[in-house]
Amino acid sequence: MTAPTARPYNFSAGPAVLPEEVLREAAAEMLDWHGSGMSVMEMSHRGREFISIYEQAERDVRELLAVPEHYRILFMQGGGLGENAIVPLNLSHRLPEAKVDFVITGSWSQKSHKEARRYCDAQIAASNEGVGAANHTAMPAPSGWQLRDGLSYVHICSNETIHGVEFAQWPDLQSLGCDAPLVVDCSSHILSRPIDWSRVGLAFAGAQKNIGPAGVTLVFVRDDLIGHALSVCPSAFDYQIVAANQSMFNTPPTYAIYIAGLVFQWLKRGGGVAAMEARSLEKSTLLYDTIDNSDGYYVNRVAPDCRSRMNVPFFLHDESLNEAFLAGARQHGLLQLKGHKSVGGMRASIYNAMPLDGVRSLVGYMREFAARHG
Image (cartoon, rainbow, N blue to C red):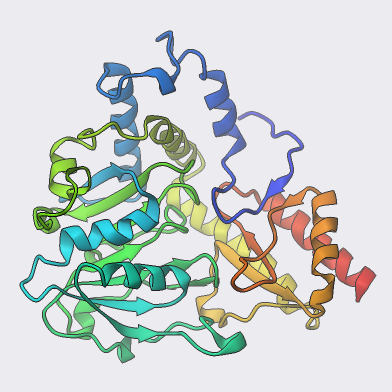
């Protein structure tokens, strides 16, 4: 394994940090992939070289997430926001009434619901929307969800990057008396924890947070949910057509798939998803403990039982010090810590590629800043 360099630690929420080992490997192969005489960016997506890259990436992610054989893995374009339209175009009308229920837990599930309303009867079954500091800081208990009968699917965002809330467990809809498939936007914490596929009909994830560069979106869809697209659904977004063509109906984002494949191999070398889950728990616990034990100097407003292990928002007790905090962080090699514009404060995104030393550096700086300005 190549020794890391003294690069800054990038806490961006996405596009986000990539493993340095992967970047070095991609750089070494930039002009000539495996003696082919071509960069991956120059390859035909139908040539044997790229097909081998694609097939290996698909095998590796299926292995990492233990994806059952009756789920298709699609490499698509459009990002997570694109899937907010692509999912209802494919699934919402699989039953005549075209009813879909949403659980609102933050900005991304709100966007999903708003987009789906263009294509179907999309209603809110539960929400954690509140007022002021209490907005999107706890999870609505599944036992209280008001799910309708005859649903085409139920949609959740399992980790909200802006507000920093995460489902500790994905809901079991059958135990709630609902036989609809669960659709999960898991863009920001995919590959950081195992997935119980018995609870999921479809999961999707934009790559640019925890998989690779922007440009490719992974869709994991159960076989029986394919083949129900609306007639107005673009062919390139019809799951049945994409699946039948092994994600090659149109030119896929080849270089993004290649980098994702390198990340999958890096994950396998590092112990797989179980190892990533243990590391994410260690990193997030260190950061949350630092916040909670700061005597109120730093505050995280999310209920402890649903705090995200990937995206940690926090606020200084005196927000007039925000710019000084960010300037000092940059001087310490700690980048992209400014919170989302809609909520303010700070946010540290600590995806799989963020090493423990990065979080240690952050908490060391936080303690130093509090001591100097407290």
